[in-house]
Amino acid sequence: MHELGITENIVNIALAKAGEAQASRISQINLVIGEMSGFVADCIQFYFDSLSRDTIAQGAVLHFELVPAQLRCRNCSTVFSPQDTLWSCPECHGQSVEISKGRELYMESIEVE
Amino acid sequence: MKKIEVIQNILEANETIASRNRQLLNDHKVFCINIMSAPGAGKTSLILQTMTMLKDKLSIGVIEGDVASTVDAEKVQSKAKAVVQINTRNMPESCSLMAAMIESALKSMPLDNIDLLLIENVGNLICPSEFTLGEHKRVVISSLPEGDDKPIKYPLIFIDADAVIINKMDLLPHVDFDMTAFRRSIEGLNPKVEIFQLSCKTGEGIESWWSWVLEQIKTNIPKQ
Image (cartoon, rainbow over all chains, first blue to last red; front, side, top):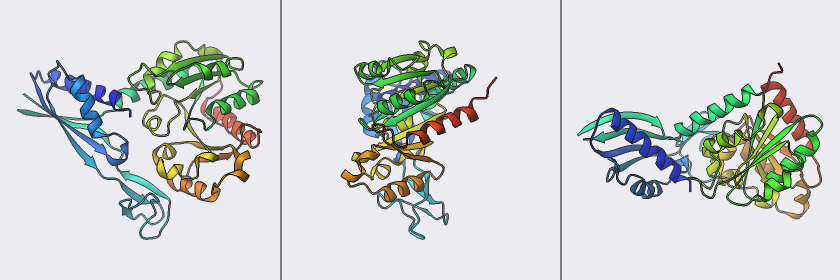
């Protein structure tokens, strides 16, 4: 839903980094996206194709590393993957949990020529 | 072929502008609250009630965010010191306010004459959770007719909230809303959150909300 602005940032960051390295073409952009972050990879790809047109990032492969959600129980510290929408701890059944992984949204690296 | 390590938060551009907004607000001793909810939960009603209750104590500015129209800005116009309407329809994101939109709106705000700035975000429980604006506190309104499962369906916005307002309490006898389950899910996600049960329509419970606002201003904005 809000991937357009995000994709603009992706293109800007990649172009800036490629510029610093005096690269002539960006062949791949490696992104890390958490399952909970609310960003949809297909949607980013769709906007990327249009926003990168006529730049050295045109045609670059977007590689997404998707990080599954991981929760931690505040009660007994058990780390677990949410199995249902209730997010209760499989050990103590407590419902006080924090997200330990899955909110990531960053560019890990770019591959350039 | 060469690999260049980047490790850069993609939301950094927004967060940099948000910090700048926060600094500007601090310089002018303006306390700022970002109010988020689904459409129709009562953001505008809460702003109107807050202005009515605090009009003798504080000078209040409002930034209204909507995809289109100036309906909300017109509603709050008479009670606010200043109102800026942002229409997101033609912006890169229409589903949420972003820090750059606030930066531009702040230019039209008489910051020296304002104590409290209320930002009404676009009605949406998903997108606004990703974008900080430079606010001091994030407040989410959930209203009884929406049902008690919203924290389970949209956890992020509740995890990052400083306060959650349960609005339309006057409808409690008429809707199936499990208050215990609702409070339990919010407190599970976010043990530090303040929860207020109120009705913007009848005014029931509103005093605990505005007292909290005054307290937050006292704590966060030191007097000269």
